[in-house]
Image (cartoon, rainbow, N blue to C red; front, side, top):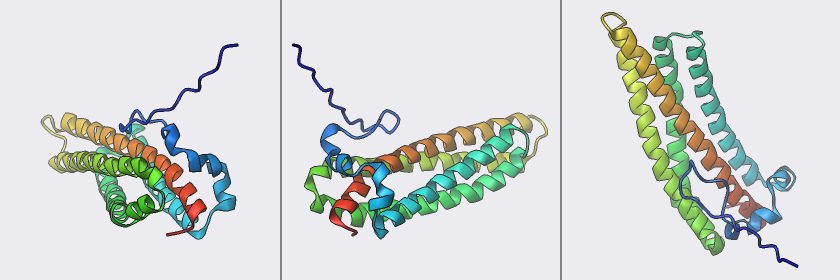
Length: 199
C-alpha cells in the first residue's frame, strides 16, 4: 500500500502569487474557519470585518467608475473628478488602518501567538508593497487630471485616453492586491481574535 503524502502549502510573499497561508500558519483557521466567524465572532471580529468590507466597497466604487468610463457613461474628465475623490478616500483610510496594525495590533498579536509571527511579518511587507501600488495609482490619477485639464485638441484626446487607461490599470492592480491582502489578513487575525479575545 502506497502511503499518501499530503502536499504542504507554501507561502508566497508576492500578493499576486499567494493563495492562502502556509500549512504551519493555519492551525487556528482550521479550528475557526471563515464560515464560523459570524456565529463565534466577538465585537472586535465584527468591527474588523466591517472595516475591511468598507475597503472592499471603496474598491468596488472605483471599479464602477472605471466601468462607466469604458462603457462611455462618463467622459474621461468626469472620471478624473470621480477618481480623485474616491481614490483619495481609500488611500487615506488604508494608510491609517495599516499604521494602527503595524504599530499596535501586529506587535500584540505576535506576543499573544508567536507561532503566527511569520504571517504578521508577511502582512507588514504587504503594507509596504501596497504603498508602492498606492503611489502608482496616485500618480496615474494626477496624470489623468492633468490630461483632462489640458483639453482634447491637437493630440490631447489620445493623451487623455491613454491617461484614463493607465489610471484604470493602476487602480485595478491596487484594488486586486488590497482585496487579496484583506482576505489573507482576516484568515490570520479573525481566528486569533476568536481564540484569544479582542485586543
